[in-house]
Image 1 (cartoon, rainbow, N blue to C red):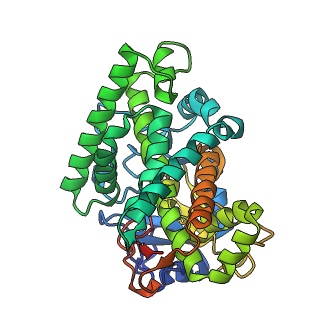
Image 2 (image 1 turned 45 degrees about the vertical axis):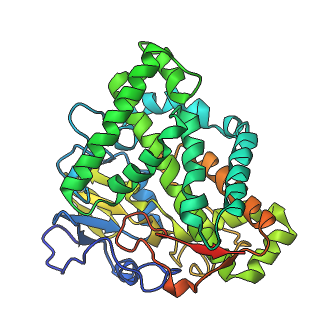
Length: 402
């Protein structure tokens, strides 16, 4: 049983990819080790890394691991990711029973039935941005013109953020998620949280018919988040509701334009889009850093002893390519039988908005390829710029024409 005294050299995290369709080589090496190993974070601290499917799933389902971002042992990549003391840590950084109450307060807006009612509006937003794409210059950057604004507008409407602030959110979300210095990250976080604080205050004074407005109108009721927690919830919903679908749309368009045979299959049979989206989520697995935890007690996992107070990363990108779980895991296969991946996490923190993300992706991709049948890449995949240095994988830009 390995423990904290091991002297094995710790690789750095995040790890680079050698192919846009492959997981980092270092992930495979971690998965093939007999026991969990440690990695070195950008902060300089060490954390355990779980890379096998069963280990990641077990860790995410074990209440001896905490999501509390303020715990001194939590494996933050950079220290600026801890919210300022005047703000809560949001659902992502809460543990039961606080997490249970906060999630229950907002869960009704994200059930499959509730989200399904949003389909017509999501379709309108997608059509609007396809229109803009068609009316704009060629070539166009699909990331800037389509992949980023579509999910941002959807989540802004859902939580009641004025869409005229979209440019602010595009800029600030990129800064917060991809800051290269603690100072830049702290400034971005303070700016965004300050905006959210004002947004919630305004809704408490004059409630609106949206997720945050309806909660603001119920302030003081048992189980309803107070002002501080509502600010954190608005922040979490905005960031999570934009970052994941935006990156998957860009990567999905790239992959399908690079695979014309597969794209033809989907055009010929649109009923297969849900399966394609599910496989895209498994194949690329964007937001793995949300599956970080800190041990509250000594825990034996994956052949290692995780001591109380030590941090651990759940590398869902690696877990979703684990050959012990998925046959030919590096093959993109929409006919895959086993599709219970970990792209949305697992356990009590499984992504609240997963149904919304699926509908957004299905609508955006199916509509884009149906309305622009001759869409094509301007340059080969190997020349594209990827977010290699960022936690959330994606494309910086995707030049396309038609």
